[in-house]
Length: 437
Picture 1 (cartoon, rainbow, N blue to C red):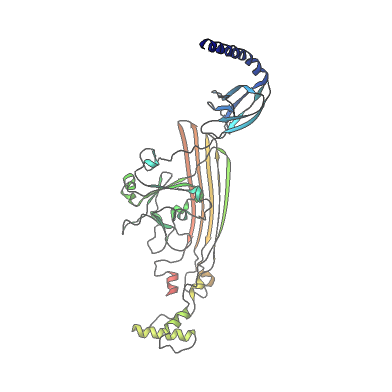
Picture 2 (cartoon, rainbow, N blue to C red):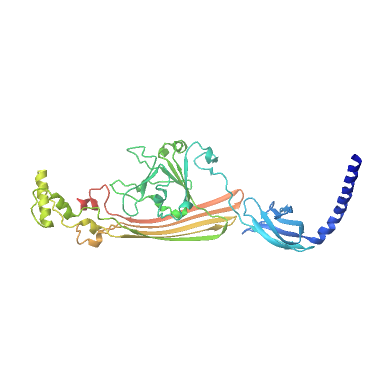
């Protein structure tokens, strides 16, 4: 049995040697080759070590230092060539191969982002994976809020993260919000978190109000379209990393920067209407009627009932209601109208491997619902100035990379604001408080 087995193996060996001798002749008659170069889109820089292979076969190779490649013994006919490299978008191209000839294929790859675990490079001494941090860092991605009706930073951050509260300073147009992270820590000091924009601290002390009125927020000078993400440091590590002043938390704003690729332009326009429901405020006649529901009011008509109501209140309080005179006209509806706002913004982003740019501009105008000037002849003595807010801003980010060891960045932000509002809020001279009294 052993001798028969050896004869069988010897017969197969002769057949394999014969096929091996005929293979070069057959492949040369029914196969061709593909040659070409792989470069980077835009810069046309040759890409080395890119993988090039024929889909569905074992034929493949890598590009050399000049980005060139050659695929040999490719079967004749239409073939699909796949080119891929880490950090670039994969490309598939159909190529027709003719037996005995070389087909040419040049491929340009686009740079693409590689999704990896998040790295935190701010708030700690060294770059650390987010899951390894011993404190809480909340991240708000502005890209997820592009379609939300957001007109300023105060609206962007309000209600987006647990423990972060944006308290409106008043209901007037253009007035910002007071931000609180995990409540208030002091009864006498400001409880505002410290804010950094692209690593530079923003001082907000100049816009704090001490006369009982609301005030605009300097954070609203930053166009929402220019914000890439917001990081909120809420834990006790805020004071550890930034000092005791950061005991109220830290907010870090990162603005958008240029990217490699063709220029991309965006434009957005928003129109808004603003109204205040006046039916929640009791009219003067109804107030007088309710006071006169008790015995002591016998007159007919609003004026007489109002006079009886004043006499009744004087007797109950033990002193006359003087020198103030009752107002028979409802002032609140005369102070309010329908407000109107409009916002227009645009941005331009692009660049190459050497220079990237981002620029945005924003123009916002809003007329609030307060309009005393409309009935100033009726509401005599009140400040006729309306609540209006005009804001224009320009933001740019430029990055120059002359070499792999040098990166130059320039960031600018210009903002111009005109804000007008009457006396309001916790103010004894407030227009609405006087009208209600």
